[in-house]
Length: 527
Image (cartoon, rainbow, N blue to C red; front, side, top):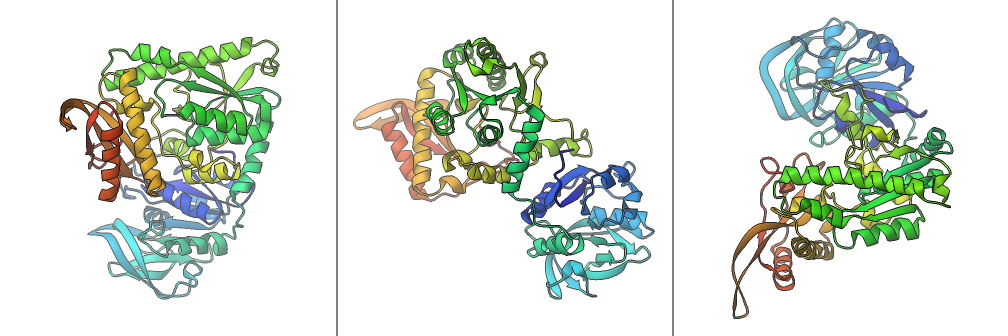
């Protein structure tokens, strides 16, 4: 589990709901720290973490299914307020002497909750609420001490409570946007029932994170693979605030970067933040390895393996530097921009305990022989919180709110062989896409907007000349987390400007197409 801060906290036991992360985010929006733990975490471990309250998530199983995730029932005896959502409510009823059955009536979608009996959970919310249901099982008899505080048309026990034991259950999902006042229900639980303080702020996080890093690192040196993306950039800024010149960032130019990327990163971190920055121009190395390669997976492997070698060489080079303060100590620590969703992946029902962290794409899975200890100062944060930290640390908006960019860079946006000529064409086209999106105030409204170069040539006419040139595809998508995505209905005028400029200004392109595929079935990137 993450190093828990000392302020108020809500623990969320994960039973496999697709909404578990949403619950955690909703609690944090109340400025209260939340942490997701495995469903089978023993009550003694829960007690040791001293939470102000517990939330039991929903889940796809039925409490009676063979192998269904179960809870340690001792949790209900800890005296800590508990809110069970959907499957969490079923578990509570099942373990405390109530009755749960599969009714054959699946209640899914919007519904109306009729509130009865005064409950702290619904304080100030009136007598009727719009809610979102998603369940097949149903509680048909309540455990002793419980009472009904809300019903829907299809469910007599849509909201229940045992106020003496501070146990609460909801058949619907308060965390989703389809329950418009769900956030207020969670606020009532967090503030009035659990008595949490609003002490989870990014200002307090920065101070705590800096103190944690100083304690972990001591006087030793830390190295960070800086990509210019949001996560590694915020990690660099936070570590620099914490340990100053003990941090050295390595920025590798693999020749597959966006236009002016190396200039922006060196200006922001080298000149503005005065971070010790080693810039490695390895573009020739990467492009020579990619010569003649057209298979997408092979491209990715070549880029990943070569990055490791370049990174290793850069560290050896740093260690050999004479007369530099970085030779005072060996590099003991490797910093990574691991975020909380990366940690959560290993807390799932099928996954391993939360201490197991996946390799981060910024360092491409560095070999064990390098013997680094990891420093992961952002591993408690969601992406939106990382952006807030970045702004508070003084990073410019162009870094903090930049769109995601794939680790293998433009190589996965050039279908077929990657050559200097094709990279030049794509960079020019991509620069036009970004500048027009920014000028039209659309850049920060979408998840990603970029150009793709196809190995397809077609006939065109420019002036009086017949041409046989390349095709560029424009990809603009909206998404919450990159797991699913939909193409964006941008104004035709904007598409026309982008297409016109690419066709007229980028030598070697005579056709521009717009990708109207969603994910699934397509992916966001083309390779």
